[in-house]
Length: 195
Image (cartoon, rainbow, N blue to C red; front, side):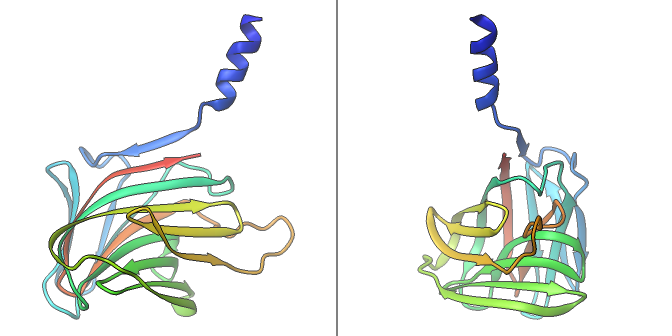
């Protein structure tokens, strides 16, 4: 009987990745176009760019199984929300030429998929997001092997799916990351991935 209870409890325990940015345990790597920076400091992943033309990303290959469903959440504190400054999440990051990017600004959410450096898919949705200074944002991404659902502050903002072959998953890598662009300064924290 005790063994049955332990097996039942073990079936409900989910694998979980927690990144609080107290150290660089996942090996986050910065890539900057011109003038920008991404660094772990004071328990957050701090990212900023100085002009409208600048962009910075920070990526890692996280220890989770991209061939299993998951829910990813994180918190962000943006210096300012407006039309020019945007920020977001990278998924299925293989390298600087192959990834999925979900990003937001004051009135919109956008999704872009890049394959070999070329834009292969894009989506646009209106997004009601409070403008102003020092705005807190909560991101959530749900993945069920064939679809990604993106939520901002608990509200579904967009979903993405594509036609897949037999035994094929939407994601092919556990590469994840964050982006800041257009003069944005933002802190990401409390990244969690539950499977």
